[in-house]
Image 1 (cartoon, rainbow, N blue to C red):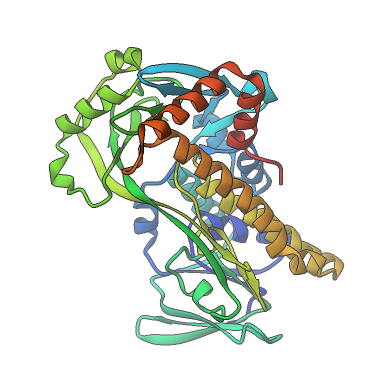
Image 2: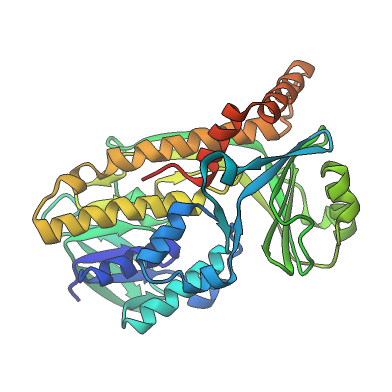
Amino acid sequence: MRTQVCIIGGGPSGLLLSQLLDRAGIASVVLERQSRDYVLGRIRAGVLEYGTVGMLEQAGVAERAHAEGLPHSGTYLAVQNKGFRIDFDALIGKKVMVYGQTEVTRDLYAARAAAGGTVIHGVEGTQPRDLDTAAPYVTYTLGGTEHRIDCDFVAGCDGFHGPSRQAIPKNVLTEYERVYPFGWLGVLSETPPVSHELIYANHPRGFALASMRNANLSRYYIQAPVDDSLGKWTDQAFWDELRRRLPHDAADALITGPAIEKSIAPLRSYVADPMRWGRLFLVGDAAHIVPPTGAKGLNLAVSDVHYLFEALKQHYNEHDDSGLDGYSQTALARVWNAIRFSWWFTTTMHRFPDQTPFDQAIQDAELRYLEGSTTAQRGLAENYVGLPY
């Protein structure tokens, strides 16, 4: 098989890149290790930056998001069970949208199918090859038979554990990492959200987040040891702990119900540099991981897609490779901005095992300053809603 761009990874970033390329007349093939049902069954974040919504519009897949998504013009922060609001609309005139990553992926699948796009599921042993030559190709096994795709470029949208980043020589790659000493215990419940906007809570017992997917589906998190057994956390134990950490008015209004999904996710900050080697371009989690505080993971992957799509379009339409040559530097500049914001938000809102009374007082002072300073609030709003591409 021959195509112009071979995309390894059929999650939202790979599908979005394929959809944009197709609309620009550039051929692509998407390879995905898991089944479509598996991909759509993954529970992921649901806060979309304004730039991400714009990219979905550009790809022609934003209709359902606009119809069913929940625009949010602000968010709440809380310290010691008392909250205050950050008004995005008043501060910077922009919003975010709550619309689940699963739904974004579903919309992209539908668009690729309608356009006759090639998405191959169930592939094994995928390996990008000859990336430092003018004739790269990708091999994979499907149903016991090995296949080969010749292409001009390879886009590695295959996540942290995928083969794309592993194909970059170790003496070329620099990796930066910060592993946080706790996780997020998350519960999905078919209950009305406790607030019409997200609540991020700093509490002496640990962080908590009240979020939602829609008007009848809530997503709640509490900070917990990453090695905790899920069996320790009965539904009742989770709801009791969440109430302790939320602002008092939210705790009193909380409607509980059976958990339909429960999991503990580790937190880390990670960056791989460079994001390009030869004809290979890394996108999303293949190149960077952010802690979920501030919901930058999917949004950062979409910004990578933006830079790579514009560079490929420039290459094919204008015979100009400056965008491809500058992809890694351009993408990494925005990556590091998001890494910094997510690190700051995580360290400000969470309790660390070795935290001293001084550290606690600094967190409290940081949040009090944020509550009283329009300038500080504007900085948070700009980063939360999304820095420009």
